[in-house]
Length: 350
Ligand SMILES: [Zn+2]
Image (cartoon, rainbow, N blue to C red; front, side, top):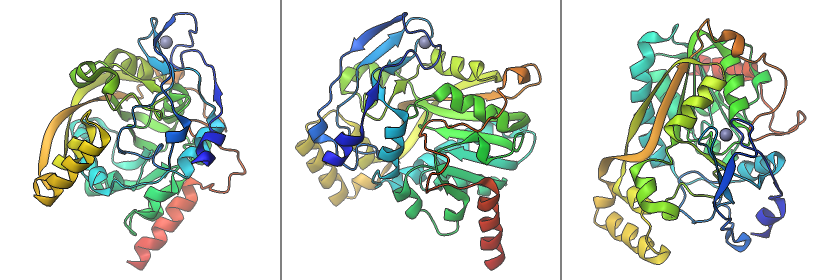
């Protein structure tokens, strides 16, 4: 466990959305026990640990953000080595996200070129292919979910943080980023870079936890969204501001109805750890744990288009690092062309 505590150096920061450092107030002080950090601390859909950094609310843009927060370079290592155990849930979530894409499909400039940032085990890439998208790719900084990916999908996933310079500008009709923007150090730069990679009229679709959702307000600090992995938490207002500031127009939003197995919903309940483990085990033994249940889990979908009017707001794509940053000489480097080359080879062999 000590390997995690040793790497998590933290830095103070201003609001990562609007840049104001003096319009924020502390909502909650840090609740963090380094001794409880394990290999699942940075894994997706883990059991909630009820640990978080000091969280501040920005009066300017409504973002809730951690400061101090882990330094970008420490995040890269934390995610690279994070464990993974959520295949069933990622497939459920991918189907939900495909439903969101269907809503905006008719307005996209086509179905050629789709990129999923924070692709995990690639379950959503499979959905994109089923929707008729071509030249589909994902990037994922953690090795474990990629290892768990279907062998047909794995070649589409680049094992790296999202870096705009890995892709040519104006390449994609759709860029998606699901439950990832809470995890990166600079969510605004990530979205600006995504805007630069889209074709004119292309869309970015994001899903974020809504900190103003009923479930989050009822559970307060016992809500699983208060987590050491989350460096910021959005509301509808701040999530829309994120895409607007990144250069997107015609911004839309919708509450997400998630469909998960009953045992996964049990994971999210604010019960003592041992009681929760027993409840999950009992539900699985009785097979009710596998029953699919659809509920609003407190997630928001926000989308925006790269419109002509906003185009000048899109930042020029420069070689720099976003989110799970790493050095250019990173051992897990990949590029768009190599992803496509491997994909073409896989198709030729099938
Ligand atoms: Zn702000």
